[in-house]
Each structure stands twice: as structure tokens, then as C-alpha cells.
Amino acid sequence: MADKGNWVLTLSVCTICLLVQADIIKHAPVGQLFVHEIQREVYQNEFEPFLKHYGRIYNDPMVFKCNKLQFPDLPRWLRFTQRHPYDNGFLYGTPLPQDLGRNIIEIFVTNKRSYETFKDRLVINVEPAVKLMPYQAEFFIGLREIEKVLPLEVQEEIKQDIKIIWGTDHLNYVNITSALDCGGRVPLPLPGHYEGVYVTLGSDQPYSTCLLRLQTADHRQECEAGGKITGDCSVCSIPANCVSWCKSALINSSQPVPPPAPTVGSGILVWGGEFIPPVSPPERDFIPDYIITVIVPFVLAVLLCLILSYVMCCRREGVLQLYHHHTIRGDSSELRKMAGKRASVPQPLSTMPMFNTRTGLRAPPEYPSDSVHIPLIMAQQ
Ligand SMILES: *[C@@H]1O[C@H](CO)[C@@H](O)[C@H](O)[C@H]1NC(C)=O
Ligand SMILES: *[C@@H]1O[C@H](CO)[C@@H](O)[C@H](O)[C@H]1NC(C)=O
Image (cartoon, rainbow, N blue to C red; front, side):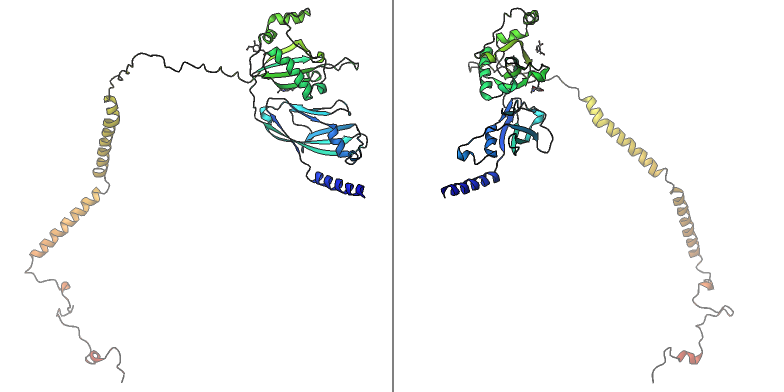
């Protein structure tokens, strides 16, 4: 009875788990190594959720397939590696400034024993660079393979050694690359043979004198000769982490070297002598300016005015008609004056109000006697 109750409880808890299955969210600053370990134990629980309850834990071989959501492959800067189905997988890489933004990575887990699959989501937020690392150096570790270097503990061990070489604590990983990606050869499948790993670290602290030796011609000659290396100041607390001095190099990073911090003075201004006021500026001749800004426009305006008045008064087309009109008016008024002078002469008949053309009599018009009284509109009787 108690068993059954437990089953129901587990089932409901798992249903809730599935419903609220959250994305894994990670942050990756630009220019720094990002590593996410895909752990088999985590997914083992997803495949056999109830077996743990009974104290049985399987160790199933698993393979992972990762791709960007809705894309067939990973983003350019991100790489995936898993040596063996019994090993954990790693997503790693260094985002560049052009990779800023959110990357949703789908992880398909296949259980190679039961052939069950499970899908998980990883969200990687690529954020702007938080650390300036103008000084960078690359070291080759011959006795390692990439999957053995990516776990955080191993990264930390290697960093401890390099901190001593560099003489600073301000160290960060910039890149970790398998030698196979840099033209290395696949090693013999024998114990003690590894492909080797290149690790790049960066710092805001300048190189130590020991590291600066890597750039000298002496160092190159010694390495080419293959004899004894005098300037080797590498340190390794764990033999597997020893760096090959001849395959290490300083990298000229594209990041600018920060300017040296300003030196703080005593807080008292130094005596700079007496204040000498600046001499007044030399005299300036304003006549050319006056001519250009006042005289020239004025002369132009007068010229324009003259041209306009000439065109308006002397070159008008209507002047001739005006003259004709004037003479006609003069002539007619002269005629009228002459007519006024002959007052004794009888007026021409044509100017009289009514006259008979035959008799020459002036008489009112004759109407028929009766017709005179015929009303125009008949009165109503
Ligand atoms: C890291 O190494 C890989 C492989 O050599 C290279 O393609 C990539 O550009 C490197 N990334 C950076 C930021 O140096
Ligand atoms: C890095 O720059 C220095 C001078 O600034 C130069 O001597 C050296 O050769 C450069 N190294 C590389 C790998 O370009």
C-alpha cells in the first residue's frame, strides 16, 4: 500500500518536472573560453527515473548530438567533443564580438543501451567582453588530449603552473584547441601517446621577462638546433601538464594595450611664473570689406535703377499711341470751341427736337382724334 502511494507521488513529481523542464542558461563573455560539460549522470536519471528510487543506478553509454535550434550545425565559434560513449561530452569555444547574442543549442541524448532519446536545451548568452586581455600566450601540452583538459579542475591545475611562469594571478583562458585541429597527427593507439593540446591564456599584465625570451632569436635558434634549452622557465606540478617550451609562443592580440595609469602628483601646482596677458591682435584694414559689402551693392543698385527707369520711360511701346490720343483730343476741343463761336447762325434742323422734313415746320406729332382717347387697356365696364 505504501509502495503504491510512493509510485503516485513519484509520477506526479515527474509530470511536473517534464512540464516545467527549464532550459540550461549559460553566459559567455566575448574573447574568453566557454566550456559546458554535458554530463551523462544527469541524463541517466531522465532515462530511468524510477530505478534510482530502488537504489539501482545504470551506467549507460550515451552519445550526444548538438546543434543550434533550427540549424543543422553548431554556431561557428562553438565546438563539441566526446571521446567515448562512456565519457562526458563538452561544448566549448571562444565567442568573437560578431557572435554577440543568444544561442539556443539543442542537445539530443541517445542511450546506446536502450536506444531511448532525450532532448535538452542549452541557452548560451554571448555577452560583451568583460576583461581586456592585451597580452596573450599559447602553450603546448604534449601529454594531454582535449577532453582531459576541458574539465574545470584540470584547467585550474594548468593555470596554476602558468601563473608562476607569468608572475601574475590575472590569467584567463582564451582558447583550448586540440593539436589535431592545428595540423597535428593522430597518435598511435598506445598508452602514453596523446595528440596534445594548445592552450591560450590572456592577461592584462605584461609578460614576465621569462616569457619575453620566447620572442628572442636565441630561443628560436636553440629550438631549431634541438639541443639544450637554456631559457626554459616552465613549471609543472603534474607531469601530464608540462608545457613544451619550444612550442609556446606569445600572441600579438588585436586588443590595444591599456595606457599606463596616470602618476599622482603632490597635489600642489608648480609655480608657472607671472601671468602675461596675450598681446592684442594686429590692426585690421576694414576698407576692402567696406567696399565689398556696401559700395559694390550700392553701385549695382543704382545701375539697376537707371536701367529700369530708362526701360520704363523711354522705351515704352505705348508712348506713340498716347501721343495720337493727345492730338485727337486737342483737335476735337478746338473744333468745339470754333462751333461755340457761331452763336448767331440758326441751329441745324437736325439738332431740333421735331420737324417735318417736307414743310420744315416744327409741330407736335398728329394722332387720329379718336385714337388719342382710346385707352391702351380697355377699362372693364
Ligand atoms: C580558437 O582556436 C580555434 C582552433 O585553432 C580557432 O579556429 C579559433 O579562431 C580560436 N579562437 C580565438 C578567439 O582565438
Ligand atoms: C608581435 O609584435 C612584435 C612587435 O610589436 C613583433 O616583433 C613580433 O614579431 C610579433 N609577433 C607575431 C607573432 O606577430
